[in-house]
Length: 241
Length: 315
Image (cartoon, rainbow over all chains, first blue to last red; front, side, top):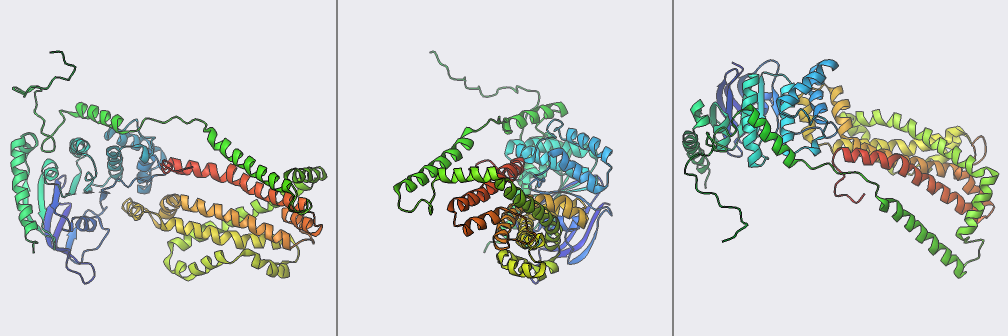
């Protein structure tokens, strides 16, 4: 099992706990959508899995080589071209100079940007930047890929396409993906499993399986989206004063 | 009824494509080829068409026009005759004096001496200040300890070091260089530190996620990210070294110190020759402008353009 979370808790200083007793198991090659309203500690949980922050309590098991990470903003380095951004990730991983060039081109082709490699980030559209960012996180060559609302800032047309794109790449590369989002439709569209995180403190309160039928049958997918939305709202209503 | 309106689509009685598309809920493309085509269409819609670079003549003509206007005002003021001509010489008097100084070889000698010193002093300052600045920006205890001192040194006019330098090094080039260093080094260090401070924290996180070591982080991520601020520091460092140099040359004359622009200025003062003084001031100004136009402006423009930071500015 690449990721096992046991009774995981996190609090900053003396404040109220952000995460409390989070339990989850994520299998190899699985695509898990982590869903929750704002302030449920989704990003904190991702940071803990990535090793960027330590948990306050509980235990977790993650791959020893760490995880690749994709941020909400593309976070590409503006002084490098798309290709060089990917090559930097390869370089920091210790790939030799000759290997870098070929691998970077291969990754650019994978995200359908084979001809845009020499453009700078500011010359690319938001969707293209996120694809370069995806290629860069794949360049890290980790089995586990963590994604923190990577499509939240994109327009709807681009986002729909990138959903197809991400699904295709996930199938081609066999990565384990943990995808954080506050968008129920996105969670249902992408995840094989949707985990709902409660807010303050964050805790996994329910989970749903999404089958291949949901990918092609809009009625089925819509139904599931409705069920999950209702449960999410119930969770939000709890905080009404 | 003739109409050029696009016909309204009929409500679909039967599906037009073999597959219904329910965006956001299900797969929206019909396969890898379809996806590639859709994406490439969207990419070309969302990217700006490349803009052509052409020479913008207003960049050249406007500064020249401004210069002409200033010289005309100067000439007009002189021709009113409020002051004696030897106290306020006109543009033509100064130009004539400049010609005399040129034929004596003094212009060439003084510009060359000063420029050479300024550049050598500046290059050495950069070589010292860059590693020190990077170290201070990256190591918190060092920065807390020395930061205030460096900021203070930047505020301290480097001319204040001239008397001390003359006592330590006598009337030699060492005095001049010492004063230049004390002017340029703190300001380059400060520029680099403030450049590092302005780096979006996201870049460091990306560096950490990508597995950069401390040294890799400093050289591959921090330094390039801080480049715009660093360049600002270099510009200011050059200005400080040029100013300090002039101050040192005016105050410390004689000994083995060569004949620079500051020395020319001081000579004009001693001879009460206002035309020489004005010539020296204009030469000092001209060198400053030329370095800015020929060295810093092109580098800065390239740097900002490559990062997409130029659009909308008045440059």
